[in-house]
Length: 437
Figure 1 (cartoon, rainbow, N blue to C red):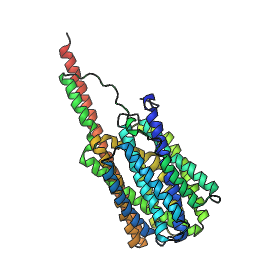
Figure 2: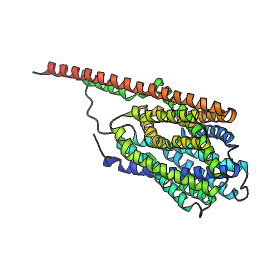
Figure 3: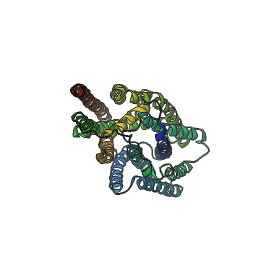
Figure 4: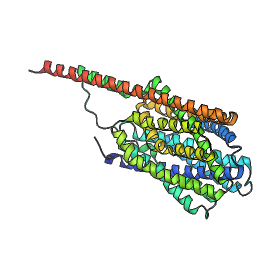
């Protein structure tokens, strides 16, 4: 088993690594600015409404982006998105001094971060799948995944140290610059695709023909509707839970810091830096190890189990301080999502046939995800505190059920694969015995 990234993959891996790092840095800046500005100047009263608008806007933007990318090459798609977000961020910088307490502008900056996060996620996963493919090393996937948490560390530390010296408007301008810079690592992205390994000459005997047919069957197992259904359910329930956890977390932070923009900005910066450090450690020492061992079930099971525990404490607990601590710990579980959980899901997409892969990624990231956010946000907007807690526990349970169903499907396929291999090995021995002199 390969323990390091093969030399033939170095160029693609490093360029994708810097691409994900730059995009994650731009998103972290936009997210910090959007949260700090809105919570400090508008408070938490309109947060649930913004969540609803955000989900709808993200769904529409993702649908438009998916429609466009079907007609554009990978390289052109990545260029267009970077330039577009840079222009929007720059315009927001120009308007902010004149409309500093405008609800529509502050909500627009908040929404910009959400749309950027959705489109960038589609771009990164699509680029990794189309360039790396399922035949690349698993260590390469873990190496590329380090870019996002490293960006959180760098940007978080920068904001935490310089929050009192640099204005939020300047951070937003830096985000626009990073959007443009992100185009550079993926220049000529269509030429970066990792070639498949050299295959043995085609044999026409019965055993080789059977092996080829079986190999094709095994490679495309994840293209089944059942697999796509359960991974879609997993993503929908996961996003709904994380949306509600994020909402409660932001409300608790706003209750602590009020309208102090500088303190809010510094808090978010330090939080992102700290969680980034944990994410890097998990990505470097756990994600790669789990992928090498093909322990995919454990990788996607840890998060729903942990959040079921924290959400149960939240549902049964009371008191501002207690709830703030519980929601913070629940939010910290994002480190496992970014380092192991999402890396594993990204790798599972490679099991889908190439012609269906981009569509599956776009549907789950661009349609299922925002619709789940809208559903969760509507519950937050229209429901009471008791309704929030019951819904949170219920959806977390459904997330766990979807995860178990996906694990069972993968395990069933692996068992079938082992049986077929043993059968082929037995037939191969019989074939050799017949041909022996």
